[in-house]
Image (tube, rainbow, N blue to C red; front, side, top):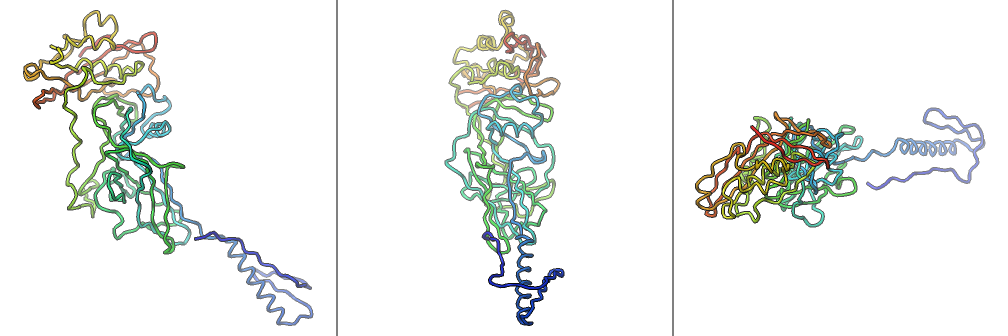
Length: 460
């Protein structure tokens, strides 16, 4: 609808004599010497003018309103984000507590949702008009990019969603709304097939929208198609004055933060955030009608396997935050479990020099951190005979027992952390074996005068 301008009514080139009486919404004029015809015409003109004024004064029917914004919802869906710089729990302000507050803070720092951007779309009708939403689609802005490097953060789901749930797959050529479940899993079935969303006045329709990305990093806007009193309308929604963003999962191993309401654990391994698809989809034990698609995959595709090529360096590239004890403890464990027989490593004792940057001088002098470590394993003969290698495929550092590190700068002189790790043995001919619990124990770190931390002891 176009804009409605003001209408002005006026009487020109006439002289009105006598009293004017206003009675309710009818004006009666007594005009001397003019006769009843002029009186009737004048009354009718003024009644029409007043009627026009009253309609305009009541105002045009309000327009429907549609908005969209990022959210973690009500905690029912998991959240994954990446910040393009190293980050530990010490780098998160102490005032930022909990996953939702952290997501808001990370968005403000330039963070990008990984795998799935969780959005909420709120739509409200306009007065007594009939407003219907016929479709929702995503339009990619610019050229998709490779997923960014940085520190990933992960918050697991904690509840059950309740709003209307839709999904869009940006890796698809047809980026239309699909049926989704309340936990963010997206089907292969279009949502707007023979159905609409009708909007009511002053009663927002809330839609949880999961926008998926597996391979690339995208910027996108949402396009909503609908009708108002049968007239076609299109609304474009974005993140304020810029597009929304979401990135795929970067392959390989990286350091991440795993959060709960009370704090964070620092983990090393495969980055989480792979988009979740379902065919069919269910909420609880109830299958969602219309989500069974014969031509689509029946199960969620597993993530691609980790690279098994022999590493180019004895220790994988690590981003270590010296003032973050969890980061230092993980680097110490990874350096101590990155072994390659072909490079001359004969056992854990041979890797002590690689661990020295993360140990106090006293510990290095004692010669600890290598051959006499806790749970010192016996290498499989396949590794020694075939000159294989070991790769740390996952590790975690956290406050025992099962505690999480609160945000904010660490100032303790002594920090004791529980560290668990898992390694995988490889050989050039394709043999591999996972060894869980390669190192599982307590690591003690001492704070140095410059505020950095170094490992000083370990035990069961």
